[in-house]
Amino acid sequence: MRERAGSRNGDHDRAAPAIRVNGACKTYEGSDRPALLPTSFTVGRGEFVSLVGPSGCGKSTLLGMIAGLLRPDAGCVEALGRPVDGPGEGRAMVFQDAALFPWLTVLGNVEYGLRAHGVGRAERRERALEAVRLVHLDHVMDRRPHELSGGMRQRASIARALVMRPDILLMDEPFSALDAQTRTILSDELQRIWLETRPTVVFVTHNLIEAAFLSDTVHLLSSGPGRIVRTYDVDIPRPRDEADPALLDLRHDMLERLRAEVDDAAARRAQVAEVVDL
Amino acid sequence: MSTAAGGADAAGGRRARASRGARALVTGFLRRSWFVLLILLVWWLVTAAGWVDPYKLPSPGDVLGTLGTLLTERALLVDLGATLLRLVEGWAIGVVAGVLLGILTGGSRVLEDGIRPVIAGLQAVPTIAFLPLAILWFGFNGTAVLAITAFGTFKPMALATYGAMHQISPTLLMAGRALGARGLFLQRTLVFPAIVPSLVTGLKMGWSFAWRALMAAEIVVTGAAGLGGVLELGREIGAIDVVMAVILVILVVGIATEQLVFARLERWVNRRWGLVGAR
Image 1 (tube, rainbow over the protein chains, first blue to last red):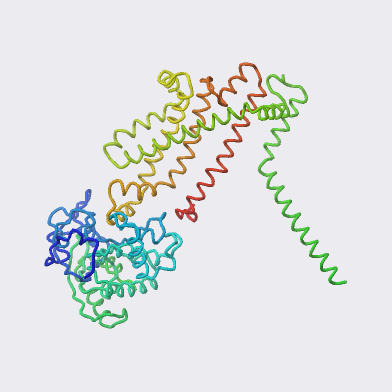
Image 2 (image 1 turned 90 degrees about the vertical axis):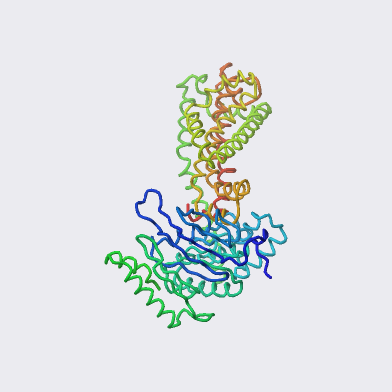
């Protein structure tokens, strides 16, 4: 059985789902409109779930709550059977802009979380090398982030999260700052990595195709106020191909749904325009 | 025949290139130093013509001669060494204290709200105003001077550290926390390295504040060795060539530390932190 960094305490409930969100809602200070209406869903162990929708739909708010970086106003969020009250504990996060430490090399960045957990030097190096190889960055592991392309930086950021052997991998629009080609390549890579390591993933994106391509389950969110409007199960066998007609059909359905959901014509145009990207 | 001509051409080309390079060097030097040369010329003319009393303004040659004598007699070197040692010590104490306080209070809202206005208020008081206090506490000696130097560095350093703390990217902090960094580990491995580029600017500023405070204090507290003491002695015995020679030494030390230490440090940090393109 695979050892996980978060399992050292060893007392989480094996039967519980990876994530349970129960009636969580959020209104930000100084705003009269809720960012997220009470929302509930669960994510099974080893499941790949996407939260997709236009900006302001509360998808990043939801992810922040699961990460333990934000507190819901009401309701609760559980990870691995325990209430979330802060970051860590088997959850690792990948940010939109990679958020690598500029003063550390790729390898140094990947080792950082292990250092924070007091893992010894030799084991640290070994696990970091393994993670760096997994994302195909072994040839640049001694470079610093500013010497890397955007795609490489995001790979490094994924390695930095995976090295923790997280039960849950949280990804906040990890590919949205990349050009279309790099994005396609990294989506493919992420599929391969997920098939190899099988963590539970919550993936936030505004790209419908990306969400459908990667996920077992897609929660479609709409804004003003943020809420889940529909949930899709994607039963297409893996490894998948982004050009699969079934994925394009699914994308079409999601677009229609989003159109129907937003009454105001101008708001609809804006929201739909945002999720229609290739 | 033709080869000989070709060889001559090549040699001519090399000579032409070399002379072009030499000319560029000379014009570059002239462009940056014409004003200094002009000042020296006017200075020399004024003194050579005897328009001013040499006790008010000695000639450039006299000042250089005095400087030479002072340096060969070693006495000035002892004073220079004492001053530099005090400068480095006071500056280092001020830097460490300022950075520690900056990080400590920058990380806590309560501490910051209480302490920051006090430091900002103290920064409004010229450091030298605290010299009488330092003399009463530490005595009329080098310790008082050192304390003033350290204090002069401490204030801008603490303020620079606060400023830097507020510029740390929140995403970077979130990334660190999400990876399990907290407490002292977070401060040591994330907060501190993140503020280093801004600290380098603070170090430079602290150095110039340290210099000012040190010189002012040394001129008053003349018991121990130091350039300030030599300046004051020069004034007492009316040796204006000594005074001007010491000012020259101070000028050279200032330029040298800027070019040899801080400029290099800044380049190194910018390269290492990936700020080369950004600046």
